[in-house]
Image (cartoon, rainbow, N blue to C red; front, side):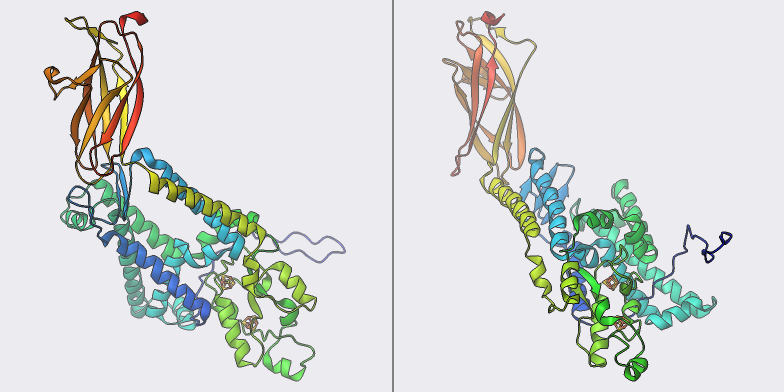
Length: 487
Ligand code: SF4
Ligand code: SF4
């Protein structure tokens, strides 16, 4: 693109860059409290992701023994001692709402901590950057290798590195499908070529996306593709914690030599560039907060180390709110970042988040494991039997949400003189109530026939279902009884 022609009296303007080619980030190894925290989060999150499908949980002989399982075929979600049925999807919706509000809460309390520490893109990028370091060496060695012409050494290193990327990416995709079927069985079927085609497709897609997004696109996903940083900027204010360079303390920056010669002229920043060198996104925090900064705190670790070496106080780069920065600039002492966490907005988010959590726990603790639904036959609405009585037919669904078969009593309420039988209980044994065994963890469908005396008028009545065990759980469903007087 040509530079615009200079306007008289104004300096020539540089050409506008509509597209800038990305530069590979070769971040340097660093150690410090934030790096160690990142290590801990990486180990915990990856450990949870890869190991969870292999954790067993005994639910008795009638239910799967995988601790966390999304059983699509049987429409169940198992999570340790909790089993969610399709009609209880509100629990999943509640958890999703909690996750959303949890992100708001974290952003309000500690800024982009989700991005900096536990977002999958961050965790896998971090992992792949460690592999780069392991195979090719630290920052300078990697930069040299990048610039070096292709030769046997470079090809061998690249092949080795990409193979490791691919193994991790495949493992990542493979772990995902384990959440949807019994893990040991699925592994056997997968390698025997007997698994469902959707399992192979899912693994292929996730392998490819992990390989490309974690291995190559890395920080570009955060900066250009992910919508969350854009939403976060709307959630943050001058009281939100950010990673901040304290320019009033650091500027004018200059080398240690220059600063030693003219101490009054220079601030604390010795322009060593260590904060940029360690940054996983390649951002220079001295330019100010930006969408490129995922607030991982690694530049704090790097700068604190430099400050220690040159005998200056730590915290030239630190977690701080913009409000605290203004106060500090005006001479107030630095405030602990912990104090910024407790503020009304954070407490409101926490209150909403905790209330939803408590409501879900309450609903979970008090839910019944017995459920009854009734569908009356519409056509014909009733039949007149030879003895003059009136018969209606119903489809009952008896739900037993326990992992053991249970005896249950179905009874008729508010329909005087009515008796019932079913496809498996002969009409001669008709009675106002019947006992059935509902298999473990299943819904039993029963065709029920109810007959009432000839003079019965149309009206409402109810079926009740009571478990004949120590729990004595029950459910009641109202329905209608059709009879000639109603037409
Ligand atoms: S600027 Fe600092 S806090 Fe921000 S991403 Fe880079 S290293 Fe992390
Ligand atoms: S690490 Fe600290 S001293 Fe070095 S350039 Fe960055 S802000 Fe300045």
